Image 1: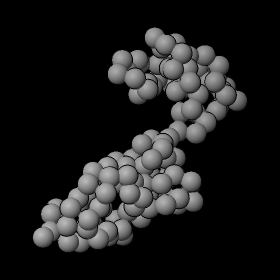
Image 2: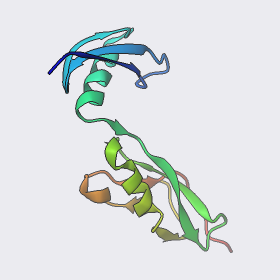
Image 3: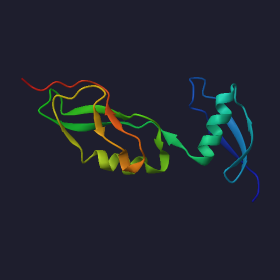
Length: 124
């Protein structure tokens, strides 16, 4: 397999370094452009197992708002994000909802939970 150079923007910290990642398939050879060691770790993870935090909303019955914000409790496998969003569209909670409440446990068998990120009281 031949060496490739892939450009990425590191999203680990607010600096947002532009990385030039030299790799052979999923094997990291060299990273240029990083201002800290997190850039190297980010590039390696992007090549082998890219993951993202997934924020979205789910429906709520009987709440002061019809939706509540939720987020994965840990980074979720990037190739499965759209499958997760499709699964969350089926979820409907009953108010009240508490911050940190598990909305979807072990999402798609990944071991990652989806949790509510704010309180949502019921309509009185």
